View 1 (cartoon, rainbow, N blue to C red):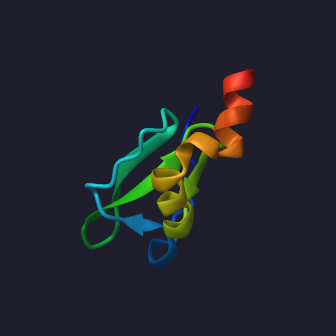
View 2 (cartoon, rainbow, N blue to C red):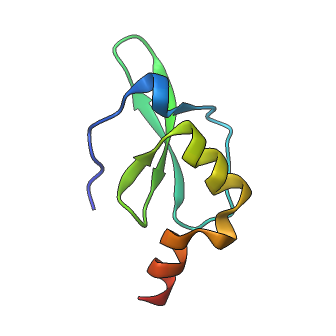
Length: 73
C-alpha cells in the first residue's frame, strides 16, 4: 500500500523517537521543504496520524478499534 501524500506538519509532526507496541504503527521520516521530520502512519487505516491520535496509539494501542478490526480480518 502506498502512503498518502497529505501531511500538514503542525498537526502531524511527532518526535522521531516515538514508539508504539502496535504492529500497525510506523514512524515515517518525512522530508519537508526545509528539513526532515517524522510523522506517524497507521498501516491499518492507511493514513497519517495526527499528534493526538499518535499519543493514543502509543498509550492505548491494545484497545484501538482499527487494530481490532484489522486483526479480525
